[in-house]
Amino acid sequence: MQNSKQYNTLPLKRAYNATEIAQYEYCPLVWWHEQYDPAVHANNEELFAQMVEIEQEYGSQAPHVPDYQVIEQILVRRGAFEQEYQATRQLPEMDDEALEEEYDEAVGSHPKVRRLLSLALVMLSFGIVLVGLSLVTLFLKLFTATMFGEVIFVAGIALLIFSVACFALLFNERRVQREKLVREHHQALGLPFGELMYENVDGLGEPITSDEHSLHGKPAYIVKLPDNRLLPVDIKPVALNSMAPESHHALQVATYCLILEEYSEEPPTHGILRYTDREFPIEYTPALRKKVLRHLKQMELSSAEMPPALQKQKATKCRACIYQPICPVGQGK
Image (cartoon, rainbow, N blue to C red):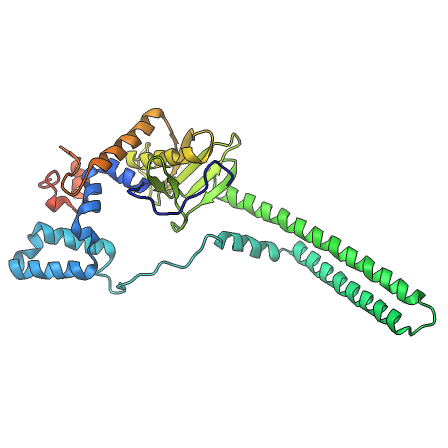
């Protein structure tokens, strides 16, 4: 991707990611607990030990203790109570060249490419044999006249030149077939017309970063449109029973747009938010940009001793929150 900034994978000091911006929009206190609650950062063995201590102190009433309930929900979220749970989970091995290798494998198995490769190798082999035979003939002077050696030498050189031409055709055909695969892949993804610059559907890709705003994130795709503007695409693997996107999801797309301002001369005009049943264009408006920056500023001002100020929250959000038992806003809802 040729732009004014290359993808930076170095860890950034006090950097926030786009998911955190979305989480802060959903509920500032959920974000705060995720950042500063000691239970979130404790390992499973420590959490189980804390549960045992609470059980010893409160006995049968332990499940009703707010701290116990929060710890239990954190462990459930981690899958610690599943029978097949493993103390150390390893991410599947996958590098950034996996897609390139898949393209190369598909191109290499294409019938036309295979035929050109076979022809080139055969012509190269015959050419080498004829040139070698002519040199041996001339050197040993097996014939009184050298015409035979000269003829097979010329024929060998001609075959070598022909094999070089076959290899050139082979490389060109590989390029054509690869471009075709890329186009088909792009169309299968249902992306807007343009060049696919970035793909991170597995979640293991390198993040895009903003040094100016100390932000980073991993959209599912980035497409360069015909006007050279970049368009981020984010995918949420859930169905949406609404005609409008979730506000925190839309703000996450806006955060990607803000980051991409540093990757192109012109800022993005919009992004795409895709659910399993529908997708929405998210206009990157000045108001949405200011909202991302405002949230970022508020997050920077927060600390373990100073949570975000929140007076009220929707009851449905509080009932679904694992921190409800210890949250002053969510208790009792």
